[in-house]
Image 1 (cartoon, rainbow, N blue to C red):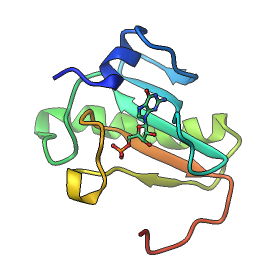
Image 2 (image 1 turned 60 degrees about the horizontal axis):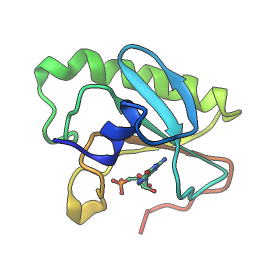
Image 3 (image 1 turned 135 degrees about the vertical axis):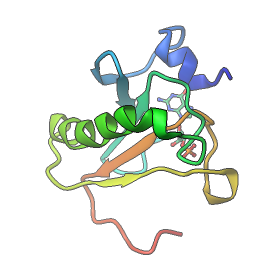
Image 4 (image 1 turned 90 degrees about the vertical axis):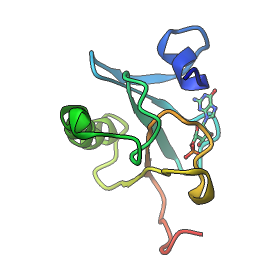
Length: 111
Ligand code: 5GP
């Protein structure tokens, strides 16, 4: 599996990186839907949450803990965390990612 996010991970295409460690990378979405719109991805190429397995528990836990830290790095105490898992619910890049959205009033339910 090679996606646009694999290229970002390999630094083959540029991204505005907010945070990086040995497990994950966070970078600004190229088409922001809110004043803060950052994508948090594992370095392991997991397709989506549907494809994640028990072996990925440590990675998924790490991402959940890092989400609030990344939001805080962007100046957001309150944020929405979204992961589209599958084409019909809006997934367009098939490398697991969490959208961190903040900085404006967000409606519910999502469209
Ligand atoms: P999805 O639709 O899969 O939930 O989210 C994919 C996200 O990746 C979209 O919000 C889209 O704007 C973002 N995206 C797609 N290509 C690129 C890219 O090349 N660079 C960055 N930074 N974001 C991208």
